[in-house]
Length: 388
Picture 1: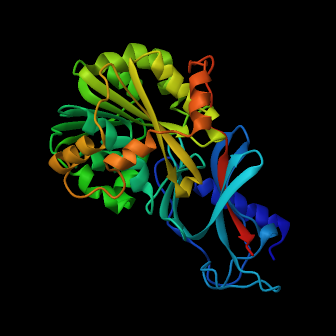
Picture 2: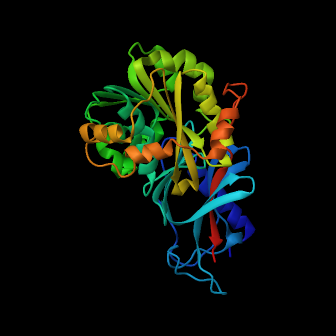
Picture 3: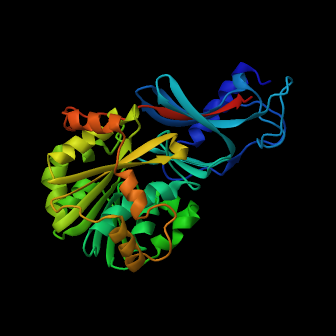
């Protein structure tokens, strides 16, 4: 075992190397020989404590099998490196890693790309899992296709956030789409995802996609053009984060809605939507949009890598009238390739929330404002722990 002084020195050396906003350190595979070492990669300070990717010598050794689960402790239990995310104060979700591929920091947030055993590559921003390659299609198809299919003829689309490129990828599958503006505040995240998330490379080189690095509010305020659909693929509202002001009533009312064409549709991711977790932000975002648009549809789907049901809200001043058969007809007419998740029946089911959530949404009175903002709980870390 390393001495405490040597442990602290290594900790500080790794920490300082990871803080550069201009570059990402080389991949960090799990070490091959059995060795304990402190690995600290700083993430944002969040309400529940400091989110961190850390491998602690006090919680077990990394196996000689490079963390593939075949290494054993003395009592026969397997050992591995794990990613752990605190979902609420007394609840944590974790899964095993093959390696930490890249880490780094931008001006706005901390970035990590993990190679996970159950979900493949996973993007983590500010200690919160954003998407994993095994199930990101559920999130992105649910975010994009219902809104574009309900629109009569979606040609011009604006994406708030979406730096990883998956939302643009799904939008560009629609044959009607002529122009997509993807506005993300973080150049480092866009460049990082463009380089490392191979599934989205084609989208970044589609001539219909125009990437703008700017704050979404500032970009929408200065633009004169309007859009058929605006998609909110923003990071979760985290206290001190760059995005929570883009969930407020004033932003929706004064900035976003005026940038929609007649019959335009707005859709946003709206956080956890489980029986217990929906009160974090989902119900408040839904109620806020009810005070801005005439027609509002909340819907949800289970995302395995999130360990929860996730919610979206679609809003417009024009009614949503398509049934499952008409949605399927538009899918066949408009979308290149086959969806893996969304079809007419799936959306019909997704928009029927459980009795508990429906009753809660009907009773929700809080509006999302800068003074009454609600935030997602939790943070993540990567810990070298022993599993049974």
